[in-house]
Image 1: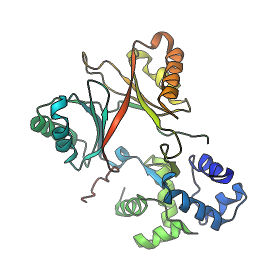
Image 2: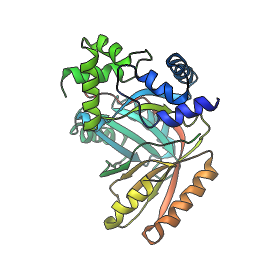
Image 3: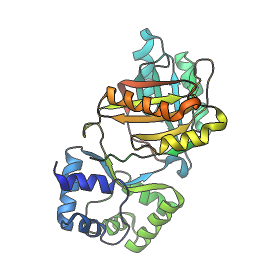
Image 4: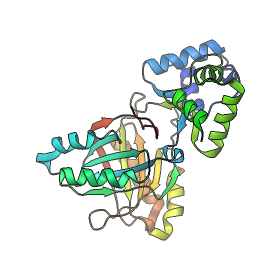
Length: 147
Length: 160
């Protein structure tokens, strides 16, 4: 990881041009060629320093439903409940966390109405109440790592 | 959003092509032309459908291994200023106002805090507590102990 890779990550987290040759335009700032920028980005994607490069879409603006949900699952049932929850394709991420509410998952559905339906099904299937925590307001999404 | 927008989203969901003219490459995939694709993506960015185009660093691989979900109880009528203040901190991603579920859950402000390790995250959480002052009616940090599932968000209409 050299200074140029660091500069690329720091700078390109913030945005990327929409023009016919955006890599050429962005490369100028780093004092490298278009080809070199492309190959450095490819290398950072290959070794997973970048998880992706491209447009970040906002699911809700596309008309779907999105929510963060939490459950308090008894220890002895945890694995089974995790399996039941994960079996829904609408469950995008699911994390075990160290709290009484020990299972936290993100639900992304095709329609907003589908959220309550899935939560109802999960509740019925697992016997554990699901706490629905859809966002009321967003203050910031993103992060600038200065490397 | 029409079928061309959807096709563009589908073609770029995994990433922007690493070709000299990436928007022309996308156009080829969706049966359109470069200018139209650029206009559509520009419009989607203005509408907020595209948050931004750019690099998404993998914080874990880059050494930021401590990520804690900090949760705060702040007065409902102070949520706006508290949320904006926390969202502006450079070590916070994803700051949201969410509903309480008393008595089990009294926190209404969520902020993901990133640091190189847990200790650094805890230091930053203490900094936030100091910044909030009297508006901090209680807080906690939830660290993830295990990833149970991680797939990307699916597109509405995506049946796979």
